[in-house]
Amino acid sequence: MSASASDYHTIAGRLAFPSLAFIDGGWQAAASRRVYENINPATGAVIGTVAHCDAADVDRAVAAARASFEAGAWSRAAPEVRKAVLLRLADLVRAHAEELAVMESLDSGKTVKDCLNEIGHEVPTFFQWYAELADKSFGKVAPTGEKTVAMIVKEPVGVVGLVLPWNFPMLMAAWKLAPALAVGCSAVLKPAEQTPLTALRLAELAMEAGLPAGVLNVVPGFGETAGQAIGRHDDIDVVSFTGSTEVGAYFLKYASESNLKPVGLEMGGKSPMIVLDDADIDDALIASAINAAFWNGGQNCSANMRQIVDRKVKDNFLQQVLDKTRALKVGDPLDPATDIGSMVSAEHRTRVLSYIEAGRQEGARLLAGGGISAGLPGFFVDPTVFDEVAPAMRIAREEIFGPVLGVIGVNGLEEALQIARDTDYGLHATVFTSNIDKALHLAKRLPCGTVAINGFTEGNVTTPFGGFKRSGSLARDNGTEAVDQYLQTKTIWMSLR
Ligand code: NAD
Image (cartoon, rainbow, N blue to C red; front, top):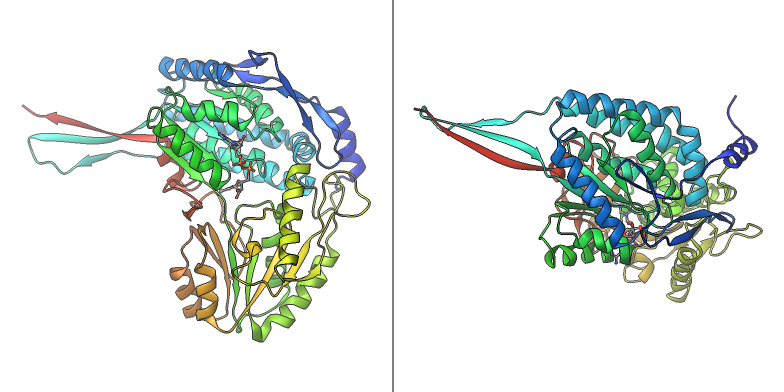
């Protein structure tokens, strides 16, 4: 029998929440002894306090990571050794999935349903997949002729700084840690200040799986202090960041003002969904449209908020979208029947509401939602649908990161493409059409890292994920491409006598 809301509340009541930093294989208070309050956004209640790490703690974490990297128990271990540890970690995450999912739900306001899917399935899949890759990657021998042998080998880059957002706390940790650890790097990871808990617990599980002390360090703290200290640290070799475009730009500045470390950036989006007049407006398409806009309460970098729909099918599309939107259950994230949990914080809810207000002011037609969810504690926003969104409106140009679906009517493919392309971002797009030529024409012309055809998806562990334009750098998470962020290339040239 599947668990109920009351089962998950019982689990929540029994949880022990991590509160310290995890440095050099153990729990440590911030050097300053400062802590901050961690809030459950679905209730506004304080979950507990968490170490308020700053530059001094980042220094300690980097020193531990460097020492572990130089010692070599992980960085120079045979790949099958790293593989065995990461496979054990995947199993431990699976075994603790319920506890971790409830912890993450409390920390973020995400629904327990989504947390269970991410932590019970996706996170362990990432550790397993990169564990399996560890002993299946080969170097090259260059074609240099008879008198020489030139080997091209890949080496772990060293100490990596991983800075994470709050919208998929444990999944984003896995996206970065799994490939970084699999190739032998040591890591200093900073979770978002709003959602520190599962990354801290993951570090503990990694030790249980057999990861040597110092290889994974987790420093909870704020962006301007701990985040900046990672960005500016002279002994961090690479930073991989996921978060907003604004903060991604800071990391480029930090790198240029410190040791010129390469910076991998996965940033914001304003992704389009195009529905052509030949698309079947069936349940699957509507489910995709709803999921694309409202999954994770719209707090999703690849959310397809700009739904560009041919006017010939728009009325039918909108009616079905509205029916489904009104049926969505907003409420207690620990209730498995809930579709949309709370926004991550009061501050973020204010931002989302300000965009809804901007949509109203600029003349978009509000058809559903539009405000705070009545009768709920915490920071909830009702799923909101706007029609008659114009491409120049702020809600069509800026990332809202909340449950807002906007419909833009168009006449034909070329107008749809022109509007879809007209954005500073380039993370994702979805296309619905029954014509394969049109689908591939759009896929080739859309300037973004992922194009989904006839179904909203971000892909899976096997496919690289990242953005064009202001959504990302050339680095990619996921797929075999992800390991490139954490490896450097060495040539060994041997002259034969
Ligand atoms: P954010 O940029 O505010 O914060 C991300 C991280 O950067 C946090 O750990 C934060 O503490 C840190 N940070 C903030 N200010 C900093 C500073 N001045 N110096 C150093 N570090 C700093 O982003 P967020 O609000 O946590 O997450 C939402 C954003 O993340 C959205 O823009 C979303 O599109 C993006 N995102 C992108 C992807 C992707 O794969 N492209 C995935 C998830 C989220």
